[in-house]
Length: 586
Image 1 (cartoon, helix red, strand yellow):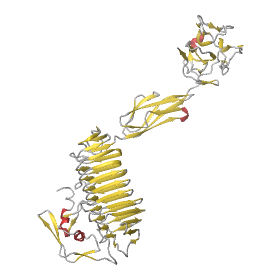
Image 2: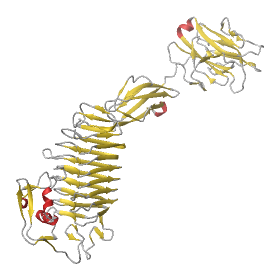
Image 3: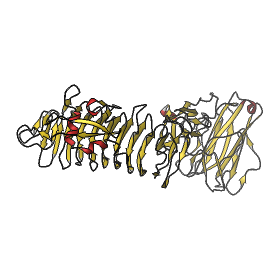
Image 4: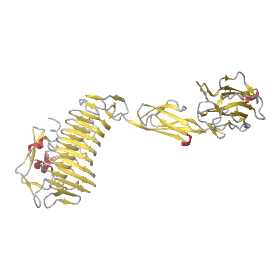
């Protein structure tokens, strides 16, 4: 016996209406004679009728449609919250609400016609009854569509398409179906259990597209006698009974998820059973299944176009293992699975925002994946370390501007911290005098500003330097001169380095301190170079400028700082650095 026949095989023995009357599901139908139900073979009950059910319509011919406590007829095609169009066989629910939990009406909406019924949802609609929210008793299917919502709640079924050829289609709508009774004892059925909490059920197949569906049943969340296909939808199906529950999703044939988000769970059995296997498409946003003893029946094959993860416990906290892509199908022995491998957002910030910039090599990453973080300080600031927020996230060295972040199991925020650079202690600047092309010797510069010119395309040809008053020791300097190279000796304390009257450019300089000045100070200097602009700071006899590039030096800037103090800032005395390198040699 297949899973579909297990639903209610004994109901096939007699007319559907007799079954309806035995359950007391429709007030508009009455039996001419008494109905007696007796078990047959000790297992399956048989419905014995003495006479045919008698249809008692109101005015006009019925369409086999009952809405709440109303029989739909030619004279009754609408009521509060609903209307029916016989030509298109469409029932529109617009703010319909029916609560039959304490009445004799045990089915909220019942259909017995031969053609498929379309239910269009507008606004919020609620049907709550003791047994079944919405039922089609024949092979006619139901299509639920529209922009509204539907809550269908029954003890046995939320939505039921009973015929073994019946189908259910949910398209574009939001549907919540609930059937939490795990067993119903009926004296009329000889204490047999009929309906055991199936939120959504159809005989031949179920299709869900562009919809939001929540199906919560004691025994099954979604039960399809054939196939189940989900596309671009958000679906959650749960079997909640901890002793009698079966599957969150059962499909006798195949279960295909083309795209969207699907969650299937069972408290007491497999989360999913699919007789012909499960297919997970490449466009699936999230597919999670969990159950005990397993997420997916271990004899079912899974064809997955995307990789996933499996866990050895239903909560997903133990034994995590990667699941590879499979085009041919594989069995999965996990209690929880998830497709695709979840990724988490990586957010990068700079604090303060004026302090610099920060970036990550990826905006999303999977758990344990490596992401490169990069921070760059703005002028006047320096990098002060990374702060990482996110469960399980780790960083290899938070003190480095470029560091490796290892993702955890949650979104991560990485903050690059910056602090203002300390201004170097104020020390009188060396006195600098520049000899410039077509100008000659310029006035001495005493405040640490530039000596020479910029923006005039004039070469710096010679230079003199002196220590300011109050600083003991000597300052020594030499130049790299066009066609001559580095000078063989250093000039000092006001002597000339470079050339006069030879039309030769200085290309680079070296400057150093001696005596007491060397013990107490560091000398920093930088050069403005043709087509490169202001270079970075060099210090204590390091070369500054260019060599082998035939580019003229146009100006220099010199500063003294206390021994070991930070270098002058990139922007200093009104001059801003253009190139981080202090010296380039070819």
